Image 1: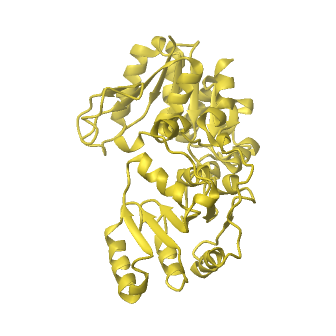
Image 2: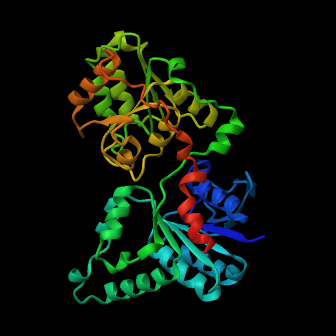
Image 3: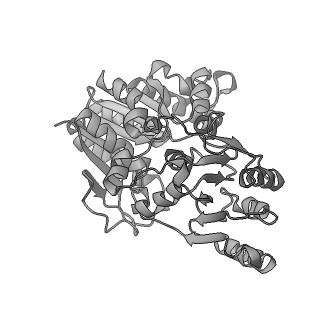
Length: 383
């Protein structure tokens, strides 16, 4: 049986069930490959299982903490030198120097193998790579350019997750992004196999409750939960409830306490559940809700939007990550960055029934599945 190996710097429990494990898993199933993820040991992954959900995990020993320098990558290089001939497909996350070196090294020892790179980025990837007019003479840049040029010849398929990133990379004049037809659009997907196994059945809209929710690390700069809390101050929730799901940053706990002291009448309507790691429990919250809200300042993709859409939530989001692809002018609306008054108006219109949020009639949400979105990658790897 062929072997698909993904190298990943530090594999942690939090990655299980996300694209880090789903992509190699679904590719392996589609291509008939055994799947292995190779990572470095750390203080937090030493008890990671050797095998989980059909994926085998191999941890390379390394001394020191996670913050140590470049020498840690030598462990991966040595692993590829020793095992390249047994690897039929090498997968990497991120288009980076580490990926470039591994792709070249792997193809030196296994010229017939295939290399797949998942960018896991947005349109801002262009900012990392200069175009030909801005090179100048810089020995370090010359070496970097040579490595990337060589790697582009070795990479068989590279995918990006948002249409904006795909167009940005395709139209770039930078030689660092000269992939031609090797570049494909493959958005992040939804794990239908796990949903079926957990017995979570998507509810039709009439069975949903008057619930809005947000999911993420509450209070971080990225998630901008302060904007959401500010919008909720004067919102007339009526019979609606708002659920905040995720860990809470210490400074944001102070903001929450201050909010409830000022607005004690909202204590029963705003519910903070804490982090929920169990997928069945988390997905049932999406399943019950009618509206999902994302106020992020930035996202590389925004997997929570994907999950919310799969369970038929109306999406209210800032213009980040894959929001444009997922909302598509039909499944929700955008809110302005840092404009809590605009968000308040949008949510109030929903509560007052002025905005129709039952928008998924006749929509095939199976198209969000990993089986579907990975088709372009699978076709390239079959060639």
